[in-house]
Image (cartoon, rainbow, N blue to C red; front, side, top):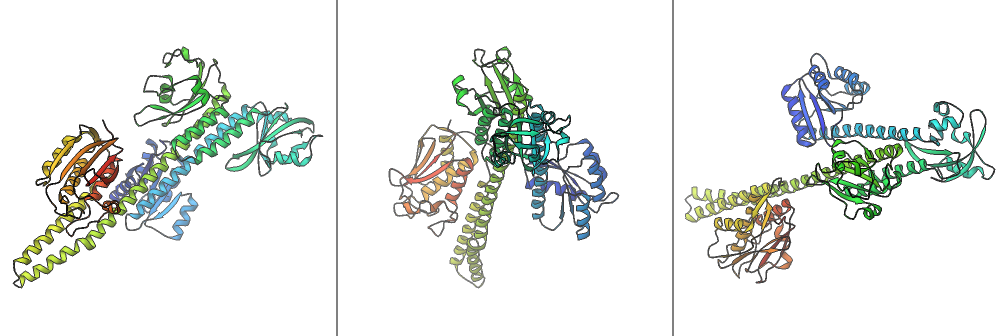
Length: 639
């Protein structure tokens, strides 16, 4: 029951229809990678399971007909490893004990509030990832076993000092037809030092105290015969345990198979520790050179434009190919293999109809797809350079790289989600501050003045109430705008900057202020938010434009200010010739609630900063050539 690395399908079973759908909705809301379906009985759940791929089941316990544990038993008969989470309001130690004994993956008691669904989503994701990781490890181990079974030299894998696996060559070397005859034997009992070596060095190699060292030894066969051999040992993980692989050769030379195994094991450790895609690609390139045995190789990863872009390559390949190509959809062998998703060795690329360069010095290539993420390509100037061992080893490396790329993608999604949640928390704190303090002050003023009016107060009370209400309206308007600008931007369009500025100038009360548009630049932006940004900057310049005004974000200043829109490298600038902003205050003006005037809401420039961040732009506040304020926006997609 497999899917793409980040996608998870969940079946939610609860006899209350609205609750089944509610659980599914909340799971999708708390984890964008989850696709959930709700059904109202165990019978429906089993039917759904027979017809659809499911990665995890979330089930109630107390259901008519078939309860949750009986449902679990039926599911286990179909899919023994499928994660099954009991999500029930029937909480008791006895039920929890029964559920664990029955083999439930997790047990969560329903409580009031939405927090339980965040917990449930995390438990679902963790359960599915554990199953997938176990399956990937099993597949990698099976691939490794295939390599070992095909090896011409004997290979013994020991865990805790006893033999856990012996390949056919080792079985034959020790005088048996079945490697299982060697299992559970103490490894050092099968090996003794030769006349030229002491016991300690031999034992150190066999027990992996000296990884990858090679010594001459004598092995004792099951028929009590003595054979002179050389043994190379290195660390390995086998069936989840740390162990030792010992490669036994009757030839007095370093063992190539052992070298490959060592390189593959080390590459896997590095891949799992990588945190960015390009790092995974670099490790893969180096590992391919070691494991496949050819230096000329490169990793191409799918870019944002849907092309296979080269992100890492060996020096040997760059000597063969001056300009390593980016593969567009449908124009090459590489793209064909990537779409097909199967490891492919091409004996002579010049004989292929879709070879990208018929004059290439490269003759044979090994294509190793990396799932949805890209492809690794190893090349040779020799026809038919790749054998079955290369293909098997390459397939193992590619599987490990794909798993590492999926892990990087998940980590990036988690970091993005954490940043988003942090930003949401910041906005919630801002809202709480406004509601508890900034809005309460004018509200108290309005209430007090209204009470005075009831007691026969004069017109000055009416004016004070009106000012308080205006203040509250301004705070609410900016607060709502601030909330909207914090959302991510998903769609942009090409906008003529001059046109957008002139549209904004027409809707802002600019009095006798002047506008100079010194740009014909077109940029990619969310046009609505771009105009909000420009309107805030224009209003800010006009309201603080007098030479005696202290700039905040709402002080009504002079009307003779000139606002200029101009180009800067990689973006645009909005500047004015007003009194400017002291250098010590330039970072503070972007903070929410910062205002130096009694009428300012303190949100105007915060909104500007958030809109810039949402676009991926950098905003810098400096001094204009006339001594006023200059806001520069860089990192803009300029057309």
